[in-house]
Structures are given as C-alpha cells and as structure tokens.
Image (cartoon, rainbow, N blue to C red; front, top):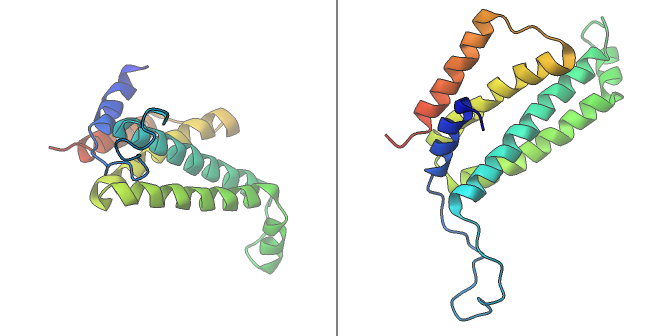
Length: 158
C-alpha cells in the first residue's frame, strides 16, 4: 500500500458506524455463524464500492458523450444518447451509487460522509488519464493532492 493511501485508510478505520444489525443474539447459533465483520472493515468495503461505482459511472458518461460526436444539444442528440451503451451503463452506475450512498448515510453523519466523496475527484482524473489519454498537468496534480488532504482532514475525528 502506498504512503499516500495509508493516512486516508487509517482515517476510515477510525470511523464508528452503528453496530451490525443482523448479528445473532448470544446463545442462538452463535457457534455456527460466520464471524461478524469489524465495523471499520465493513465501512472501508462500502467506501471502496462507492468510489469504484461512482468513478465507473463518470467514465461511462464520458464514453457515451464521446459517442455523440459534434451533435448540437437538442432532441436529436438526446435520442442518440439514449441509444448509446455508455449512457445506459452510466445510468445503472448512478442507481448502484445511490444504493451504496444510502448504506453509507445509514451508518455515518452526512457532515463526515459527504467530504469523503471527494475521493472520486482523485480517481476520475487518474482513470481518465489512463483510459482516454486526458492530461494531468502540474496544476491539476496539485489540486488532486489538495483534495486528498481535504478528505483526510474532513474525515478525521479531530
């Protein structure tokens, strides 16, 4: 794991979500039940799914938009957009992101959860660079570093 990810992951571990609701009561099949996931591991997994889904959604929208060519905004463009697989994939991605976001908000205050969504502002440019060949100049790289710092600061308990 890179040094840049160690601090945000440590902050995620410090999150204190509500206890798991489906944990078996003592004495009732507790000997055969799988071990309960630790709260920080569950929260980390949910955040990873959120970032992957939201990042994938944005990349799918770009893929769909590239399929439109130089069409002017209007009904013809909308009809063409609806026929593109990238737009449908992005729509499904938004639905998945919504479901995961609801799971996050169920266990975490909005004032702590929302700043964490800034991680998508890190992953989207990096993957746009890898998949679409978009450029990340020094100013954008500095902005990405500031976003990471902001997520770490706003996600902390202090």
